Structure formats: structure tokens, C-alpha cells
Length: 491
Image (tube, rainbow, N blue to C red):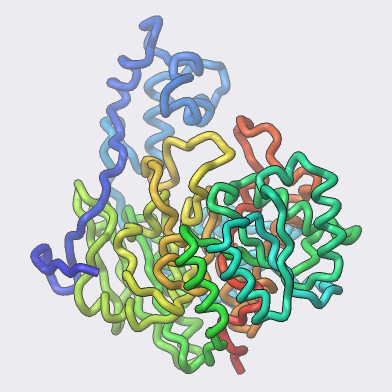
């Protein structure tokens, strides 16, 4: 990782390279550009082929089919945006750091309060789900010897077997093939899914959840799953090598690192989560270094204080961090567990550019709550023009896949729109209890299945153009050997 101190302005304050965000035009210019009949109002048809098509129903609060400038201004004001597209200056609110014990545990019958939902200050309730099989199976559509040899090594290490199919992307439309695989997996305990690069897609993942949740009669996933995925055969080989050599890290040897993001004066959810985790790790006498990355509009936002806290600021033109001060780089290199909370797009998580990842991430465990952090190379779903945080969605490498290619042994992310901390924390908690990758993944997915109340036959997205996609919640990705135990159980 290259270092650049030329932009250092104040202690712990640095301007860093990045990618520009999408600008917000004045309301007057927006009306002028799209008002086809020049009546001073916009209709859904006016903006149908623009990036504002999805915004129109949110502007049209009275649902009369027409939107005035005043309605757009009122909508913007709720998000701290002025009529001219600039940010409205706001006073910073106190940053409250609760304990994890005080956060609500949420499920279908116990929803979060409005305030907790707005601030992602709750935790999804998960619970164990028994599996009856004992076998370790690798399910793959890899046929090339360069890939297969690595999967065979891992299968041998786990005293397991390979189950090969022609094409995992065809599973949604092949009930007979699903039935054949289901019969073979009835005795499985761990199922490592190793898709080809072109097979790693949303509906492939959802078809696999349908398959694994219909091994018995309940709608829950009945094995402990995990994904074995890398960009090329050599990187897959490294992942297998890391998996074979990994030993559970005792609590005293875990070196965590939190990376947080603050884009505006009141958008402090990510900072809060870093503070929550710092308090939690302190209970076992572990320190948690924190890198907090601030946007220009967040100059007056609260700061976390204490030792090993770095507050970095991005510039107008460059908002994704690719270079870090030397002391931050040293902490990144020494850390074994990365936890990121913040917005994301393909190629960025929590304002960290994918090119800012260390070149050597061997043995690291990575958890990111960012959207698109595990985006597929080719998607089954329509492209989103804009992601939460106002970022343009461009085709770039997935953050967690780059981490795996650079040596990470486990990486957690989402193919599309993530809910962040409430769904990330149960994975960390499971690991701290000494559970395996597959156990933590199964418990999260089963809790989300119960939350959505989707039935297995509804998992696959048949109408890819539908506006609301409840299956989005099932698109979390946990790359790693499902039988691997990341951390030793805490006392």
C-alpha cells in the first residue's frame, strides 16, 4: 500500500484520493429539464427514463400524479438538502454509545422502534437450527482441473467429497436436478458452495437457499453453508491453503480493527457502531483501533476520542480512500479482524476504495455491512443508478472478493443492498461463541427467512423488474470454508 503524507493538514486529519459523488442539481433546473408540457409540474412519465424515476413516488406525497417544485424542496429538506442542491448546515447531535446488551433483539414479532430502525441500533435475533447429517460436501460447477484440484485438497482435508453439477445458474429452472442434489445432501452437515465466476449471481444463490431449505419439511436451511469463491484458480488455491492452515484465534490473540464512515453532521450511525464495538471488546480487555472517515459535509460531526482513533477527511473531488498514513497502515497490517460499517458501492466499502486494501491480507477475517460489498461480476437484476449515500453505481470489483484474492480467509458482505450492523453483528457474535463459518451463516439466513416469511419456492426472483425485492435480504455472502472456526470461544 503506497503512502502519501503530502496531503497531511493536521494531526490525524488527512485529505485522500477518491471517486466523485453524483451532484444534486437545483430544483429549478430539474423542473426546467424534465417538465415536458411546461406547466411547472413533473409527472412520472416526465422522469421515466431518468435517474429520478425511482424518486418520483417519494416526491409525490399527496399521490395526485403531479409534483411541484415545493414538493421536491420539502422532500429534500428532510434529508438536509437545500433547493439549490447544497447541504443544509445542521447542528451536531450528541453521539450516544449504548452497550450491545441494551440494543433490542428483533424478529418478526418484535420489530425495532422507529428510532432504532432509523439508526440501525438493533440486532437481528438468531438461534441455532439443528442439522442431522455428518458429511462434508463441496457443491461445485467447476470442471477445469486448475480449480478442481484445489477443491479436492480441501475435501480430502475435511474427509469429504465433491458433488459436481454442470451449471449452477441453471438450478432455478431444473427441479429434477435440484431433487437429485437434495437427495445427495440429506446426509450433509457442511456444504461448501464453489461456483464458477460466471455462476456467482443473485438467483444462483437464492436457488441454493431453496435447495438447502427443503432437505426436510421446515422452511429453514438444514445444513451449515459457506462459499468458496475467488477471482481465479490461484486465488482459490490460496483460500484453500489458508482454510487448511487456519486455527481458531484465542480472544487474547484477536487484533480487531473498526472502520467507520461519517458523510454528514447527523449521519453518525457508523461512528456509533464503532463505539459500541469498542465498549464490547473492552469487556475482554481488548483494544479496538478505529479509523473514522469523514466527508466534507461532516466537519462539525462528533468525533470518537481516545487512543488509536484516526479521524480522516476526504476532499470534494476524491471521496474514496486509497492511501493511509503510516501508523494506520501498520495497524491494518497487524489486525486480524476487520469490521466495517458504512455505505458502499461496487469497489468501495465505508469510503475505503478497493485499491486501498493491503496487498497482503493473509489470514484476515473481514466483516463489512456495506451495500454491494460482495457484488457479482454479472447480475440477474436491473442496474441501480444510485446507492444509499448518493453514490453512483459503477461496474467495479467487489470489496470482499478483492480481500479474498489478497489472502483473507473469511469475508462477509452483500450482493446488493445491505442492512449493515443489525445483520452483521450476529455473525461476529456467533464467531465469538466459537461457532464455525457455516453455523453463523445458517443462523443469519434462517433468521432472515423467518423475518421475511418467504417460502422456499419464492426465494428465486422470477420478475427481475419488480421494484421491491424482499429476497434482497437473503443475498448476504459469507466466503469461507463452512467448517472453519474463525475464533476460539470467549470465556
